[in-house]
Length: 123
Image (cartoon, rainbow, N blue to C red; front, side, top):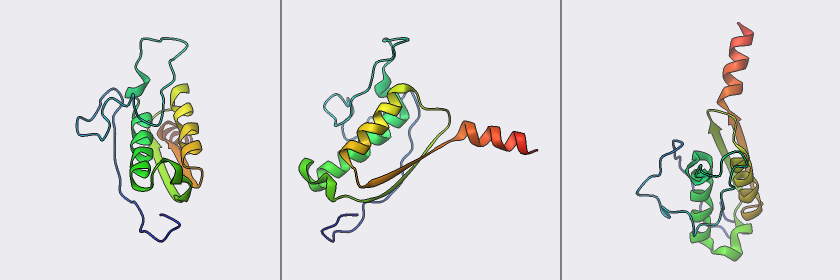
């Protein structure tokens, strides 16, 4: 939603780790607003292929196209992100970058691994 009265940007999107959608707005992500963090364990892994990174980049790209770089603080709302496993360090950095680009958009992350563990413990 935008504070100037324009309607909300809404929808849903899914991504899989290790795959990049050819129809994505900015397929190489090197010119995008977020930057992946190289892993200290293995710098050979392209963290730009993490699904969390791709999703967050797509949202920030969309907001920037709608309102421009300087007006992203006009955006407000809520995004729910479901991840199947614990996010890597690069994905945590992507979450923080998202917060810096869209400070008035609340971001909640649900970890499927934790949901599974809690459901097993309760039985």
